[in-house]
Image 1 (cartoon, one colour):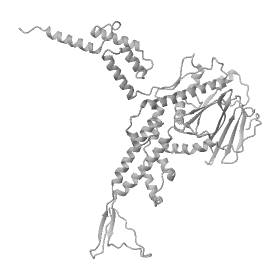
Image 2: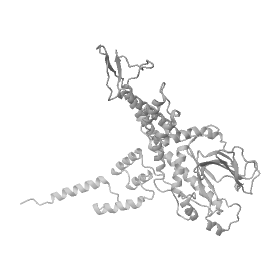
Image 3: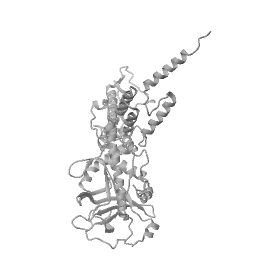
Image 4: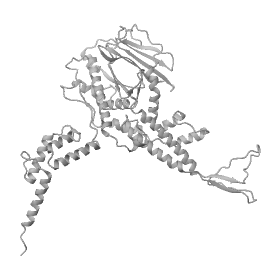
Length: 518
């Protein structure tokens, strides 16, 4: 039923019309989505991503597709990139001075669909990493103009929540300057559903949700929901006023902006293109292996049998149960034609090179260098980790902003509207850092560096947990060393070389003290 609180701004005649950026991004999204889905999705896509050979008939093409398997480096790379920030549970800081306890409670069901913050966040982060964008839209249950008491809100569980919107679902998104800051002011996103009739048939329901903040052209903010059943005309099913001058929405962005149409290139797009090239190379290999595994026969002096009706030569079908015959004049001969196999080996080399390039691009998505030298170069792990750390921090900020928007919807005061999220940014140690620490160890063993400085440098390179206490560790080492060798760490840090020398001299002394045999 349409609500009474209608707004003056006229409804859209084509609410599902997409913005220019969407038309640019859609082919990229489809390509990424297909490769992420795996081998069967690429087979189903057919000639869109796997061209036919010249003269190849439909049956041979379908057979070739069925024999081709995808090495899904794209999916592996996205999974690995997502796993690192979520290798530890993504939670809000429990300190009540840093996070409103109400937010801690809401984080257990952040979207009011049963998903806690960690599960919700992992899905939104992975989608943004894959497709370039993901959206976090904070909304509030429709109370249809009811005047609710605090008790009503508590008893009915009425509270703000966060919706995760996919890049593909948002068909229009616009920003504007609000109080000197660029903020989102307009969004349209689409959803799809089915309604089943008593006879079992399903009705397709398409919905478009439009929200406009009250800053464009002096018009007040509003929301409007459209619906189309079985692709019939669009109807407005609900509408009302939107209370803010900017949307309570955050876009988590990982792609590279390009042009003036608002489009971008998703982070893993180059890797996706390389994965499709690898798929086609695998298809070529499957085809050539089929051709070379079976002999080609040349029948010299043998007349093929003919169709008695048309007098056309019949094809000879070869197989394990086939008997070949030739005329009795003795002049017939069956020969095998040997195919060159150099191309097979070159194909495998090409496959290996492409896969090596993909693995490098998966670790460092910003790298577009796929030349022959790229497979042999030393990858700087720190660069790829720094990129992922930056994106993880950006996502943490997006989640924190979403909770602050929930606080705005709930009417929290400035002192109440506080939140701090904790996300993992420790992604391992690089070879470069390991070599540096080895150098510091050598310096420390020669007495050129203190043990405390060595441990501080190791902690700075994230070789220890953030709560690792260098001072306590040095003290513990000192106690253990003092018990064993009689050193007092507070007076003098032990030099490992001196310790070894002292132990050796002690051993020699013990030998000299042994009395000689009578």
